[in-house]
Length: 120
View (cartoon, rainbow, N blue to C red):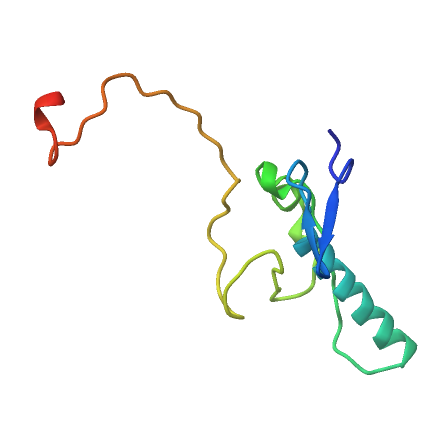
């Protein structure tokens, strides 16, 4: 299935949630909407601001495909804000829950050395 296709949501007491059989992706969508609104407000009100560079990447849950393939020499900014993470401002993102996937099978009998060592 293509990203963003067949997304099903439910709204319960004003809260938008995934219908459980599709992703919601609301965190990234909300961040993108907020950034685009900031740019619109800055332009519409002719507000002064430092230079801005917005970079939206794709395929991050499949191995950081967008960021990994981007030529960062094209950017002039010396710092960035990553909006697809938790933590306080200034935190460093060092891992992703879905960047790498490993499938393994374990064969044997269940036992624990402190509870039933005779079964090991």
